[in-house]
Length: 126
Image (cartoon, rainbow, N blue to C red; front, side, top):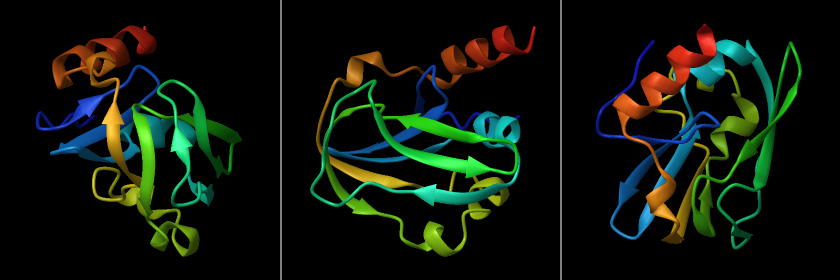
């Protein structure tokens, strides 16, 4: 399992890469491995406001459909439309296949470090 130290994480298995007042968001390696092969990604619209901790998109795998929670508050500035045609990219390269870029970010204090997130994953595996 891979936990890049330059990223921040959530207990609901999203990763966040902070870039100034913007953030890229994706699904962690653990999330994609638990979900199985992804077959569909339902992305939000650019301009949508999101609230930290609330569902803002969903993904479907061969196993099930799963909600994805916003790790931060803010406004969707960009969606990764490549995932609409290639949802399996998340399985292949979870830390490259970002879902959305959020601007005007807030609620950063709830994010976890790589070490804190690794502890969450290890506790779920037990």
